[in-house]
Length: 214
Image (tube, rainbow, N blue to C red):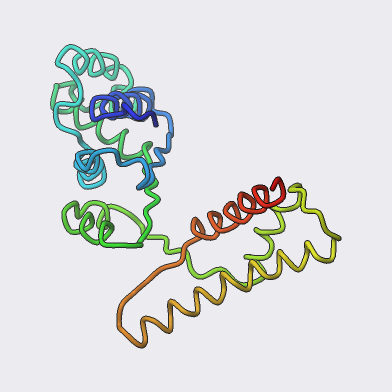
């Protein structure tokens, strides 16, 4: 998203999604991360999509009428006994939207924002199937580090580079253990996420490049 992306841009993107899913009857997935929430007002639209499948006043009157007219022959084929009234066409449009439009939200549980947003916009929870990403095993952490460092030039032997990969996995795993201990001792939850691990790897590469040039 650009820095100037706002509610108007989001509405235009939602129009594209609804035209694709409802008017054209094609499956489409909308992926949205918490890093893309430029305004909290974005979540009001997503809440409506997830809770009811309908965004009020999304289309202008002429746009809405155009979509309804295009759906008349389509609905007659699927529901030949249903009269093509405006109400029936609108319900059919929303039915196709709910059937073909899938929303994927990628939110981090770190901090108070996730909790506050879930309370303010209940559709983010009730309208979704929660997929909690569990703690990565040490072998997976090392595999990720190995992937991102495989083509990165480090002036050392292969054995030393493999030890760097091993150490990164160990560090991240111990931080995850520390988060668990912190909860047991102070009853406060902290999180270490895959994104923080990727930031750790990128941070290492940045510092190494700076030191190597110096």
